[in-house]
Image 1: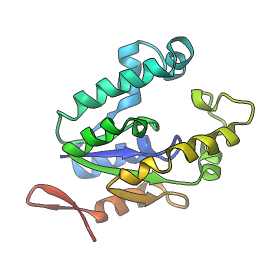
Image 2 (image 1 turned 45 degrees about the vertical axis):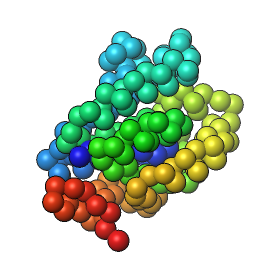
Image 3 (image 1 turned 180 degrees about the horizontal axis):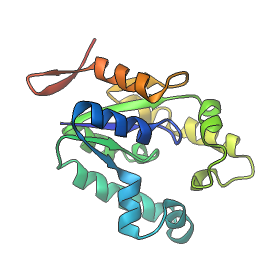
Image 4 (image 1 turned 90 degrees about the vertical axis):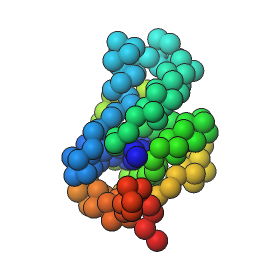
Length: 175
C-alpha cells in the first residue's frame, strides 16, 4: 500500500512526505523530482519550453508506473488531481491524503520562490486563488483531508498517522 500526498503548491507535500516516510519505514517518492530527472530539466523549464500539456502527459505516465509499486509515500504534483484517472490509479494501491490550506497561507509559504511556473504572473496571489478555485472540488475525491495552516510537518505527520491505521496490512481511515 502507498500513501499519496496531494494539495496545492506550498501545502507541504515534499517536507511532510519525507518525514512521514521516515516515520513509517516507507520509501519517499517525489513525482516532480522524477519528472525533472526524466526530462533532464527543471519543472519550470518543462513548462516554459514544452508547455503544461507535455508536463501533464509526463505526470500521467509516471502515475501509471508508480501505482504498480508498493510501500511508498508519494509526493504528487499539485495538479495531479486535474486528471481523474490519476486519482483512480493512486487509489488502487493506497490512500490519498489532501494537505489543505487556503491560498493566502500557501502564498506566504512560497512567495519568495522562483521555481513555481504557474505563479509566474503579474498577481501571483490572484493566480493562486484562481488555481485553488479550479482544483478545490477535485480534492474532494481524496481519502483524507488534513488542514495544514497552523501546523508544522511533525504535527501533520502525527495527524496522518493517527487517522490512517493499519489493519491486516491494509490502511484504513480512522473514523
